Length: 85
Image (cartoon, rainbow, N blue to C red; front, side, top):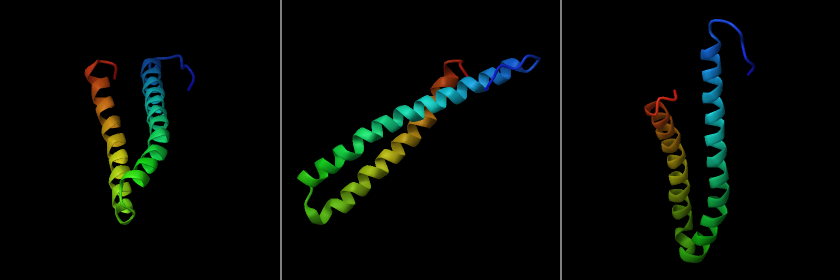
C-alpha cells in the first residue's frame, strides 16, 4: 500500500506495518512447517507400528495447526504489549 498524504496517513501506514508483519510471521511459520511435515513422516514411519501411524500423524498435524494458531495469537498480543500496535 502506498503513502497517503493527509490527516489519516499515520493510521494507514500503521496498518501497512501490521499487515507486513503478519505476512512475515505467516511466512516464517510456513518455512517451519515445510521442515516439520517430511521429518515427522520419517520419524513416524520408523518408530510407530504400522497399525498406529494414522493416529500418530493425526496428533502431530493437529499439534502443528494448534501451534500455528497459538503463535499468531500470542505474537499479536506481544506486539501490542510492546507498544507497536
